[in-house]
Image 1 (cartoon, rainbow, N blue to C red):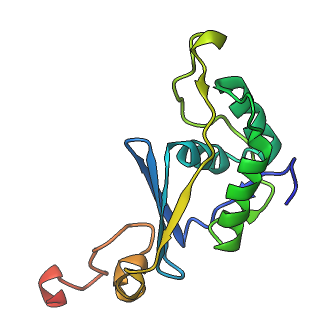
Image 2: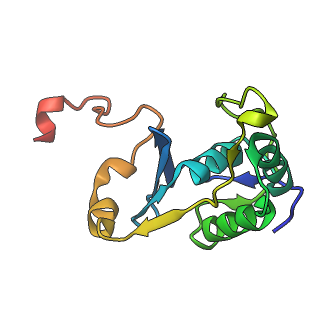
Amino acid sequence: MSESSGYSIDQAHIVSEVIDGEAIIVNLANGYYYSLDAAAAEIWLWLQSGWSAARIADAIRERYDCAGAGPEAAVRELIGALLADQIIAPGSVESCDPPPVGLPASAAAKAPFRAPSMQRFTDMQGFLLVDPIHEVDDTGWPHATRGESPASRG
């Protein structure tokens, strides 16, 4: 893993949403889904924006009180887990700013840094691999193909 390069996400097989500070990620290729706590969800947003591990660690140091905890190891550990489960891949992605997140008003307002946490769930694997919803094109699902009526789908 390079500290200075970004990561790519296979948009055809990985879907995610951040809801109330928690990121839910589904890997449609293997049927696993993941829950990332608030700290990991923030890192996820930065990874989606093409940020490198070094840039993410710098942002964490800017936003949080990291006394006694170095964010570099925590970021590397989370990225390693995402790489191992093929959620991200090393890649040169055009870096852009992530969606806005609330920044602390001053250095005195910095919250303590908490290590990110990711949980993997396999209990829905059979459903996610069988469900045809992941076999869609750019128009989404369900859409009738030319000459087919929606009623004929049954």
